[in-house]
Length: 68
Image (tube, rainbow, N blue to C red; front, side, top):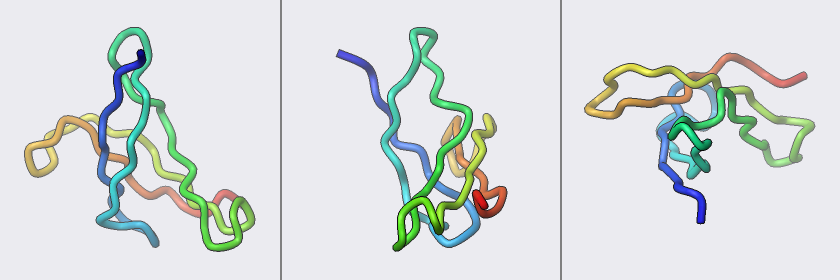
């Protein structure tokens, strides 16, 4: 069974939401998260992983822009 972690999204349309991601064999989350919009991939937003202490969390996904 893979380990998972909840990571907050910072900025963009999904600011304040969290996503649950699977960790790799080294305990790290994926480098990016594509947050789907109401129309799926047509409105997806890209979030990039950052490792820093953000309100006591080691990992956050920061908004980088639309996936278009």
